[in-house]
Length: 479
Image (cartoon, rainbow, N blue to C red; front, top):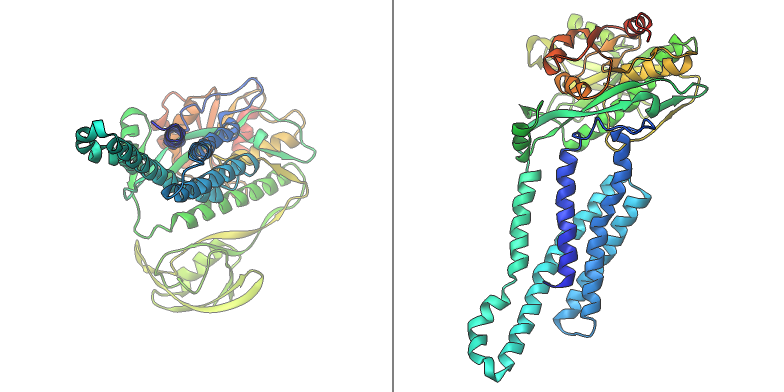
C-alpha cells in the first residue's frame, strides 16, 4: 500500500472512532480528578487530539506530492488535489487548536476534505496501477502475464473497498431514522461552571445533563448493551436541527440569567426578576403565525390588552379569543415596535382553545448587580434544566460558610422568577447518571420524583417545589 494511503486511512479510522466516542461520550462521566475537574471539563482538553485527523490527511497529501514530484501528465491534476487536501488539513488542525468553539466552520472544513481524500485514494491507486500495468506490458518476457493481469491491476481495489466500508459505517453512525433518542449524560459542578463576583469557592453542587438527539441506527445497538436509552417517534412539526440548537443555547443563557437574579435577591442583593412581555421562542411550521411572527419577538399587547407574562397571555386567549378569530398582536422585534394581524386555530389537544402555533416564554427583566463569570464546556450545549442547581450554587458562593454543609449535592429542574423549581425532561436518564456518582442527595421537581426513582431505585431522591425546600433540607442535614 502507498504510504500516503496509510496516513489517509489512519485519519479516516480516527474520524470514525471520534464519531463513536461522541455518541458514547457519557460512559466515563463519573470520572473526576483530585482537583475536582470532572469528565465534562476533560472533554475540552481531549478535543485537541481531534487535530490528529486533519493532520494525518495533510501529511499523507504532502507525502504523495513529494513522492511523485517529478512526474507529469495526469499526476499534475493529482498533485493539485493533494495540495487542496494538505491546505484543508492544516486549516482544520489550526481551527481545533486556536478556535475549538467554532464547530460549524470546523465541520465545513473537515467535510470538504473528506471527499477529496477518498478521491485521492481511488484516483491515486488507479493511476499507479495503470503505470504498473504499462511497465509490465513493456517487459517483453511478461506479455502473457500482463494480458492476464491488466484489468485487476487497473482497478483501485483497496480504494473501492475503503469507500464501500466507509459508506456502510457512515450509514450506521449517522443515517437519520425518524426517531429521537434520549440517554444519560454527565454531571456538571455548578460552582466550577459559574462564579459570582465576590463569592467564595463553594461546595459540590452538581447539575446533570442528558443527551437528546436524532437517533441513528447504531443507537439500537447501544440500547441493547447499555441502560437507560429511550426512543420516541420524531414529531412531524419538529423544527429543523439548526433552529433547535439556537433554542437550547438561548434557553441556557436565559436560565443562567434568571438563576443569577433569583440567587442574588435571596442573598440580599438586587431586586430579582420582573416580567416584561412574552417572548416567541419557536413557531410551528405552517401555523397561523408562520411568516408573521419570528423567534425572538416579544409580545406586549393582544387586541390592546397588555400581556406581561405567559399567564396574562393564556388568560386573555382563553377568555376572549375563539379558534379562527384574528388577533391584533403588538410586539417588539430588535427593539422596533410592530403590529400584525394574526389568525388563530384550534389547539391540537383542545378544539375549544385558540392558539397561534407558537412556543413562548415570559420575557424577564433581571436585576444582576454583580458580575457573573461562566465557563464554556463543549458538551454543555444548552437547555434550562440546570437552573435550580445554578441558583443554589450562587447562593452557596454568596453565603459565608456555604449552604451545602458538607453534602455532595446533585439536582435538576428549571428555576422560575419566584424560586419555583420547574419540570424538565429525561428525568430517568438523569437519575441514572447521578446514581453513578458519589452524590448524597438528588433534588428533583416534586411531580417527577416517582419517575426519577424508577431510573435509580437506590438513589436518595428528594422531591422539591422551591429552592427554599432545597435550602431547608440541607440546613437540617449538616455533616
